[in-house]
Length: 161
Image 1 (spheres, rainbow, N blue to C red):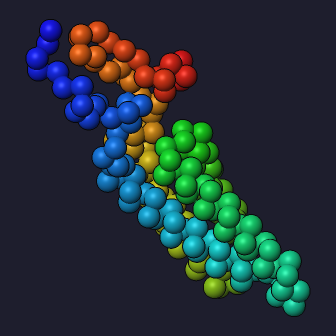
Image 2 (image 1 turned 180 degrees about the vertical axis):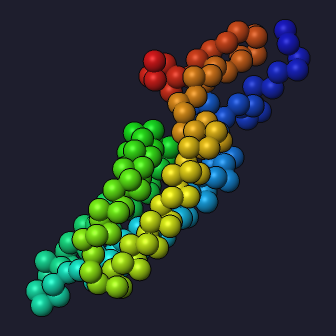
Image 3 (image 1 turned 90 degrees about the horizontal axis):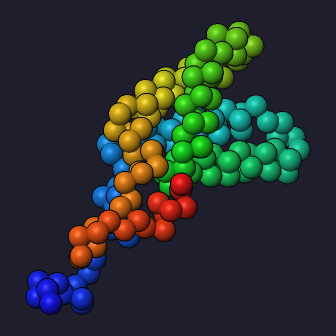
């Protein structure tokens, strides 16, 4: 019988093979910048609304705020599909920026657009750095070593296959 094993001790490996230490620094910075960019988007949207009819205008801004929060939360929860949409959508937004800028005539909207653009560029760069990509990658090594030395796969690793 193994005397070093304590059945009452907490597990030595995190449950589900997740990294409980939190996201790497590039992801934290990207999420903060993205949250700021979403705030600028809400300001831009509210400035474009026709507030003579406040109920539809407020509903539109609230729906945009909900979508922005869900998007941000999806990135925080390491949803790979949200990461892909963010990277691809951000890159296409950067490429299409000159066309979008040509349609804006209000100087306030142009300034806010440039601010949003300036926030989006580092977000995309930070999200494609190796540390961020590794954090969003589904970790195939969810194997946990049991006390008898055998490898056991967690339920999360089995479902992801």
